[in-house]
Amino acid sequence: MKEKKGSSRKKRVAAEKSFCDLSSPIKDPAPEANRSAFYRHRGDLQWSGVRDEPYKTVGGEWAGIVRRVLIGNRGESGRFHVRYFEIAPGGRSSLEWHRHEHVVICVKGRGSVRFGAKRRVMDFMDTLYIAPGDVHQLMNPHEQPFGFLCIVNARRDRPKVIRRKRGV
Image (cartoon, rainbow, N blue to C red):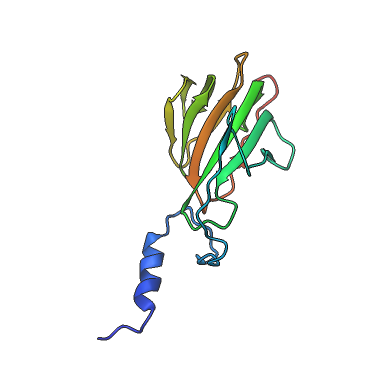
């Protein structure tokens, strides 16, 4: 039996999708948008052409955190995004879970991380894999900023924020 032209590509693309992909179809980026790019490091984990962005746009229990998207919001076709986050002393990310995985690599200072039932201190170049479905949070109880690279699936579900009970 002969397959229709193009149907093998559709099957291959469908087979490559993970369970955390969103329902919208995978689209190839416009050729003019998907270009190689170089972002010169300017020192103190800042890059030319990369601006600070809000961590999240809706209020919550997070504080003192900045996000810089290095790869992922300029039309790249990669199946991953690379972001830099920096948490100020006393700051924290949201306590959350989601169905996608990600990797965290400490590149500045030190911080604390909660993932699943575990808690660890992260130091320079410590690397953490957060599995799909694990509750997690990154915090900075130290006196210096805590900076880390976060590599995450390009197509991912929205995090589910866990609200803490008062006094916990």
